[in-house]
Image (cartoon, rainbow, N blue to C red; front, side, top):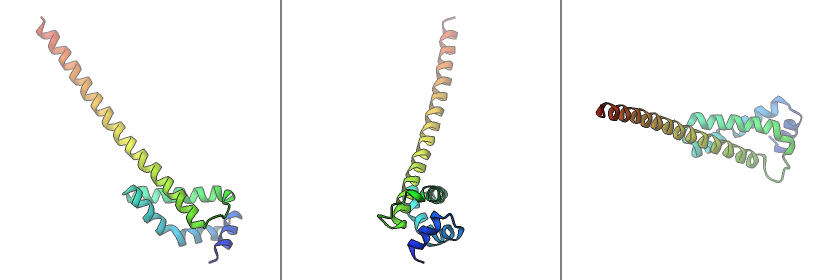
Length: 118
């Protein structure tokens, strides 16, 4: 299908145009996002977010590049954000667990020192 026709359909918010973009680019974008995320679930989420962004921002598409190039860039940005957020959650959880361990150790040492001084 002609890309200009699809873009026009997207700008007019026509369902067939969204379906055409998903059909044409969905698998390729998912594979690209997976290369960034190394997680199928996050890659699929990134592609879904990219399609939502496409629908919201299609009016800002200047057609300097192909629709796929623009959508690819959006997808990769979403994939990087999801990967970054996943990493922050893991590090944050590990840091919190370490703080809890140190807190428990501190209380145990304090109790031990108070018992020893009696």
